[in-house]
Length: 107
Image 1 (spheres, one colour):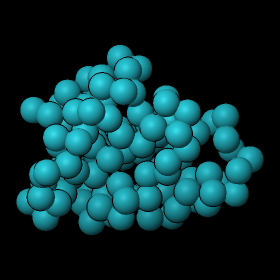
Image 2 (cartoon, one colour; image 1 turned 180 degrees about the vertical axis):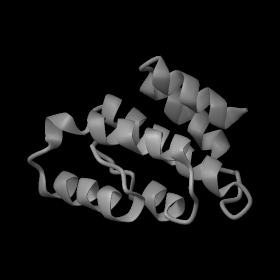
Image 3 (cartoon, rainbow, N blue to C red; image 1 turned 60 degrees about the vertical axis):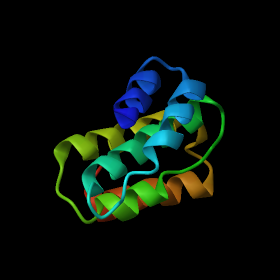
Image 4 (cartoon, helix red, strand yellow; image 1 turned 90 degrees about the vertical axis):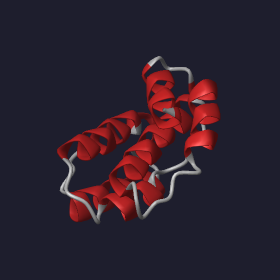
């Protein structure tokens, strides 16, 4: 439920609450809920961006590279779109290249 709350508050553009709920969701074991954890990390990455904290979702990509999920890839695509203001930053360009290569996700 806490992962769902993190997603809801991210959709509401309330990064503070999304990150608060993420702390509770972080207790989910990665091996059991791989897809859910990867999606949550993409959502949390977007919340960091909304809070003006350029934290890239590399851990999300690490996890999502092990699953096949169009829904998860949609979250990464949304995250990449949110990176638009920082497109010229080398770390952002590298991250977007990585999502294309490893997940087949275009920005």
